[in-house]
Length: 88
Image (cartoon, rainbow, N blue to C red; front, side, top):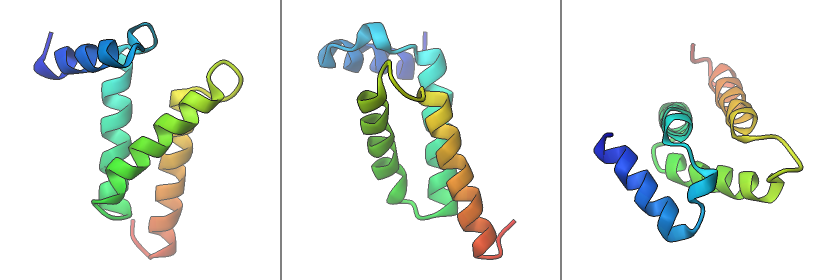
């Protein structure tokens, strides 16, 4: 297990959400999303977007789209913004 996986497990335990968090799913999902936002929008937008994604996931738990679908929606939004700015 990596230091990052250990940290995710520790934070999830502290927040009382360890049964909801799988580091193998969370890590690439959040890192890819924040990378896309940091490069496609602005660096400070990455952690804020991660927080907003967390709020959306929490609000929709069990009743709406799951993390991958919400993260894909954000990736699509970043790509559309890049296209609007004439970026590849």
